[in-house]
Image 1 (cartoon, helix red, strand yellow):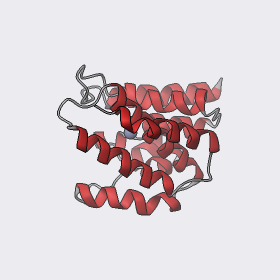
Image 2 (image 1 turned 90 degrees about the vertical axis):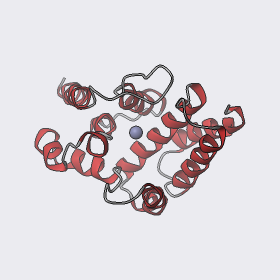
Image 3 (image 1 turned 90 degrees about the horizontal axis):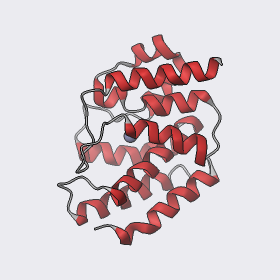
Image 4 (image 1 turned 135 degrees about the horizontal axis):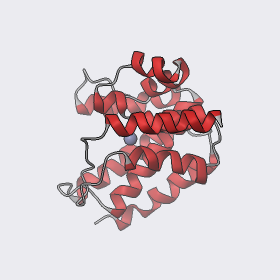
Amino acid sequence: MHDTGLLLRALAFAAERHSRQRREDAAASPYINHPIALADVLANEGRVVDVVVLSAAMLHDTIEDTGTTADELAHHFGARIAAIVVEVSDDPRLDKATRKLRQIEHAPHLSPEAKLVKLADKICNLRDLLASPPVHWPLQRQQAYFDWSAQVIAGLRGVHAPLEALFDAVYARRRDLR
Ligand code: ZN
């Protein structure tokens, strides 16, 4: 099926671009596990069927983390998917603190598709923090990440109630951080 083909092309592209990258958890998991988890949450927990959103989720960190350009994404996957990935990518010219502030400020202005990707990203990141936090992150840094994520999500509510409920459920486990 055409849609499945597009999604698998996005997966293959992201897997290749992230191939030398690892997560910061104790197991140093392959980075591609993260984009796959986003698409899984969107499709199977959020019941999102739009292959444009699912493909953008698969590709969501390629600009920010692998030097892939928006033009490349547009060439391979079309302007719509490229635009969503650009929307959810931080501006590399900004320092880390400013990037975090910008995410809070930009959340209300994202397209509905980008809001879904952002929701899934935060759900997955908080779940990962609970299950297997980065080895060098003290508790305080994990708590700060939880609170910043909640601020970002506060700005995009009203887009998808079930996914927002999934975010709230994982945020409620903040006390389980260790
Ligand atoms: Zn991500």
